[in-house]
Image (cartoon, rainbow, N blue to C red; front, side, top):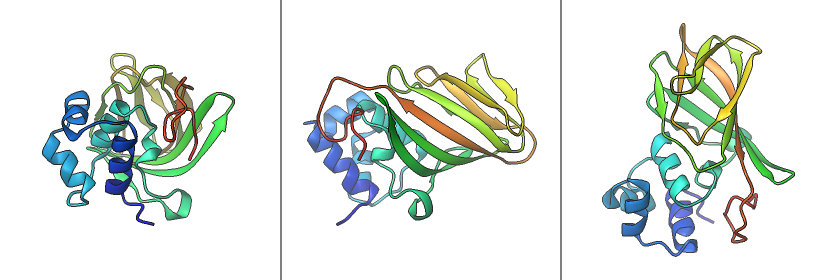
Length: 183
């Protein structure tokens, strides 16, 4: 079975009954870019994947290929993240990522309503959190904050490694791929 990002994106979009045009309008990603992604003619950056999954009411992991040792990392301006696993905890879907942060600041747009993020530093020092309320963290320190507002990530010295937990609240929808289900 083809499990590429493009195949996953097309399947998710079609499951939601969305046209390329409507997904482009809701996500802010160009129709041509979405078409190229769906046809595996271009790779997707982390911010693009977040914009698409937010518009599709799906967790980031719905578009990420593999997990654990088989995972393909996704990158942003200064973050590279690899999906470690997904779990349903009560009514919440939790995805765990190992991420490497660079000294350049990564701006992250607001995700879907109710999403929270927890960052735990495993190497280095970072500045993370909601824009205007970022906090400095060192090894072993954690911060949980609202991911549904613009937020930032930045390594403070050289690179830093963190574990990022994405907490997706349950939704009332019951279709495959919505946030109520773990695939």
